[in-house]
Amino acid sequence: MAAMARLFRSSSSSSAVFFVGRSLYTAAATELKSQSFLSRIDPKGRNVQWVFLGCPGVGKGTYASRLSVLLGVPHIATGDLVREELSSSGPLSKQLAYIVNQGKLVSDEIIISLLSKRLEAGESKGESGFILDGFPRTVRQAML
Image 1 (spheres, helix red, strand yellow):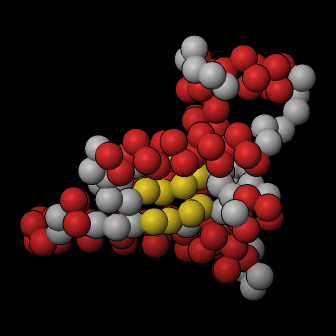
Image 2 (image 1 turned 90 degrees about the horizontal axis):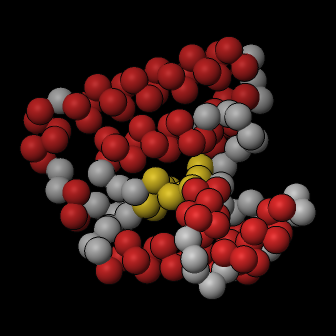
């Protein structure tokens, strides 16, 4: 939705973008909630692979989590992956703690490693899609 809002931003005010985004979300939610639509879709057969891009605070996480519920696919936020690894006793937790405590950005390699591990775990559980939030963060991540 954030990417969609950016498309409209060039010719509209930010309040108009919010209204368009809200209207599109409301229309999608109404259609998805309708009984006839829900009876026709199979969450296991869905292969949604969406990436939400945008500046901090534009609503990527909000819309990603809402659509995740409506579409039946996981919302994967790289910030959450880092926090989960920090709270675990995994091999990267000490290295991540050192990086985060110094206020540095987590390297592309670590982010990609965490994301790959999460996507593989989801695939082994039968997840057929995902919504990414916070990835790619850099041009290099997008190219990998």
